[in-house]
Length: 450
Image (cartoon, helix red, strand yellow):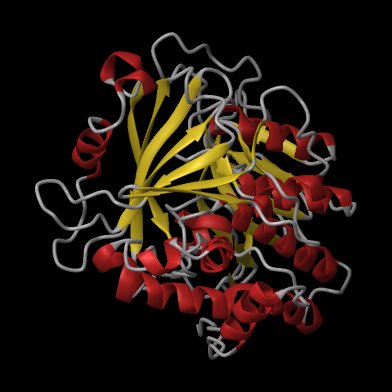
């Protein structure tokens, strides 16, 4: 490319969200020369509930992130609100996961992870917007092309990132970054995947989330992540095909939001109207009113249930939202992104230990096989639940009076929704859930033919 400057690495990771930073960290720890390219300048906003389940905490511990530092808010479990019921469910004590969750604003959560990856040896370049993959004559990805994004305030009063666009200052035109393996962690836009013709599966639902911060000293230090399952579609008596949340941030604020699938009959949900109607029902003392709001209502798409295939093609691995990895059971995406990043890093590191050619390709082709082994059956069952239950009546059918009156069924449902079981099973709930998922036929691993 005329006039461009090339930067080389063993692996390029595009996107420094949880998936990308996880992949970059694990690659760097394995001694791989990795470039981590991020279009934004940290810290930056991200639409998210900011609540981390024990599954996500487990991944942070594996990365060596200091979760005892200031700014982390621990949770004991979940509080489900359904009609007159207020049910508290403690995070389970398992051998595989910690018995607590966390809250942390994505405004600095992603920054922490990106810095952690850089401290491990990844070369972090902020302010690089990757525009398209670079292909060789055979159509294989051999790098990416990126342009510099100037640092600038995104909100009134927000200061510029003093670190600037590392690696691209003063560059004339696009920069070509080259590596034999590229990991796409570029979020729901999935720009790199689309450039290779990896289209979204139209049969898979895409949820939408909207969230806002409120100053709420009364709720900010709550020990539970609160979930509301009895919300209604605006102007109707139909249940919202999703749920609302109030997550304590521990700094005087709460993260309040809604996540919903398109309703099977009414289509896309107007989340901002639903949010206003819901918050008007909450006690005034909680502070969930306009005068206590911090920032606007922000919304984002949630690609779920492996809605993009294949997860590997021609030197490009998809992780996190770019691969549609958000759980169809509960809309959780951070834990899945962190875990997928680690798996992708392992596949890339193993592949690089082999000479370029069929043996290396065989290892990379095993990445979607491994992801399918981990989540294929669980997501297949979750996609069916989303289509047949959640998109029609939300969570009300599964939170019926029989479940709410049974501590055993409540614990089982909570573990199913959050994918928290020991394998092999250690108790009856583990055994029931693991057996049910094993009975689900394994989805086929799709591969794109040229």
